[in-house]
Image (tube, rainbow, N blue to C red; front, side, top):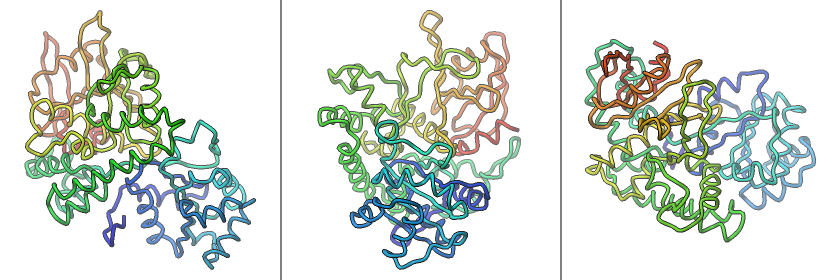
Amino acid sequence: MYYNGTMFDRSMEKDFINWKDNAYRKPLILRGARQVGKTSLIRKFGLENFDQLIEVNLEKRDQRQLFDQATSVDDFIKRIDLLFDQTVVPGTTLLFIDEIQESKNVMELLRFFAEEKPELHVMAAGSLLEAKIGRDWSIPVGRVEYRYLYPLTFFEYLKARKKTALLEAVETIQLGDLFAYGGLAGELFKEYVMVGGMPEVVKSFIETGDYSQTRAIFNRLQTAYLDDIGKYSKSKENNKYLELVLEYGPRVAGTIFKYENFGGSNYRSREMGDAVQTVEKVMLLKQVLAVNSTSLPITPKNIRPKKMIWLDVGLANFVNNAYREMLVGEYQGKIMEQVVGQSLLAGLTTRPFDLFYWSKDRDEGSAEVDFCFQHQSRLVGMEIKSGNVSQMKSLFSLGSIDPTVSLVRVSWDDLKNETWKFSGKEYKVLSIPFYLIDRWQDFLMQ
């Protein structure tokens, strides 16, 4: 990824290679919030894997006016020849259409690239595309592929920090192995919890080592997200609801919230619910719904309060005015849920991650497990323990209801399989340290 000459490797590049070599590929749309690195990632991939990268940026007025009038795929390619004086060569050219949300016509043309120029590699990106989908726009279903990009994961952060030996160690450790670098990995994970994974912020911190220097970048990012409101708001009247979500949402990151009286306002549940869902569409947040059953497929309880995972833990810290010395107590508890939730979401790039939390009905008790999701044919219950790991009554309650559920706790403890006794029963629990959360799928398979 390029930022003034700085390049970060992203794990999605391997997936891009598979797409490139697949004879049955379709045009690929990379989706994600603003400033997570979509444009830079595609540029890097194009420059490293193709003889020629041709980039069309529809946010530039002259290019939008020219390409928005294209009547066919051949006409679109002719316009490239005229504007850039470059010839598109299928097989060796990557055609990259950036900010594709600026042209409904170009979006609709993508389906015809798949039909008429299947040998041509086409990629597109658009930050606010999500807000237009489902309103007055239609997506060429079955004629395009999607990938989802999030802020840097911890492993990607280690790579950016050039911690090569440590990265290799955490990528290869297996259950039962002795691990001598847990202390170092844990300290770097705490650093990651404060800095987050926004590429520009990571670059600044790597260069200066000064967290205070990154706050100006966070401030600019937060301002940019607020400025975007008018681009996806249905009306000016709705702006105040969206602004409240952007200003207050990071304050409830990692916790359960309600639409009613959101942020201490007197706004109605319906308007706030619509606003939260709109901000979720542009991938600045994820609503984690409640589930009270262990049956598959998972059926969420839509009327129950939701849990919020914000785009990035660093942004959440900035809005909460949190510094590293604040990573204790109640704040540490919720921010560790935020960073684990963020990591889980980033692990699935071909579709959005269906993430839930498990909670008993009120008349049955108060048990609540932080995260719950389906992995292959099993349900996984995951507890996040930043402090006392012995208090896992909710996890054991879930296990007692259905012994087939895979029980996981994420904490500062070592990687291992454990046996816990509670109320006369034994429970098998997989212990994953925070710094290995990127590999949760590997360990559930072992």
